[in-house]
Length: 171
Image 1 (cartoon, rainbow, N blue to C red):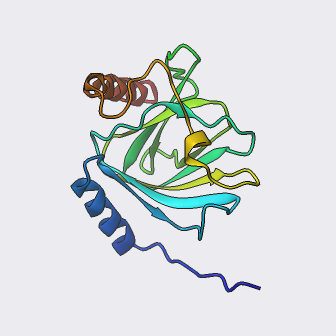
Image 2: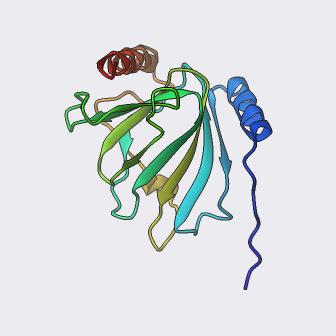
């Protein structure tokens, strides 16, 4: 039997990952906790800082449910319908102070993340028997601009506005 490694998630781990995210052009960084792409449960730390663009997407494969647990910060999980309208009742602001710690999203649900402050989540995503395949991992929303597109900057502002509306609706 293959020996399994044990990884501890500490304050120093989160500090270092957030610092890395601040230095990267995409304003986010991932630390893989799983050993390889063939594992059925991908586990990772995902650090996001304000201004990052997580393009709305869904995971179509029936095995690709996705779960988030907030470890630090404040983060809006935005849920959309097929046309791109915000589903405010399904969306949530993850905040330890406000008592919403995580979210589990079924396959096929359009979603995005907005960092309201520097945040780290523990993310788990299922994988099919064949493992991770980058080209089929995500289905990006056709109503959202690609990363790097000139329209993406304005779209990030729209997502941030939606996130702030979500904050107000939860008070």
